[in-house]
Length: 183
Image 1 (cartoon, rainbow, N blue to C red):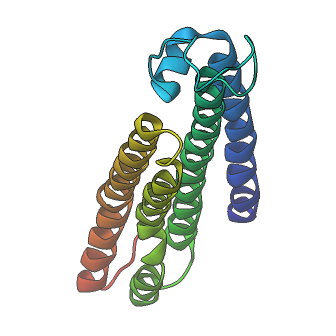
Image 2: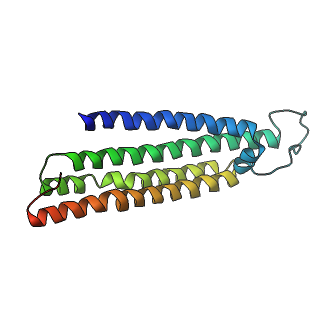
Image 3: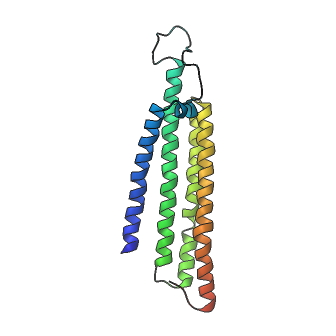
């Protein structure tokens, strides 16, 4: 019963917190020049190509800000996806750990669940590919998306493997050797 609740509540909590994070990032982008500079780069706000009326959406600054906002949203969504992938992997491993099955079956289930430890890497790769699409509009923010999504994916995958997978496998292997499986 607890596992079923965890399977529902943890991803739901992550999604709600993710929505708050995206909203907060959008507000910070709107209200903070430093945040805009991270995604848009520092630029002189008056530069335009050709004759353009002041305040026109065709100015380079307005186009750069739109590209920066899109980049910020992509970055935020990819970060939320990373946390969601981490939460799903946690729920899967916790379900295996708490199951009443024997050590051999738990070890086989862990082998089968190996894909969940790579999902953060795939999300990071998705972020890198997304950054290449953004590169035509905003080279600075595309580098930020590519590097940060890949870095977060590597870190989350390492945490999942080193802090969750390895200790559980060790426990199951030791329990399997001595004929008992700690539940």
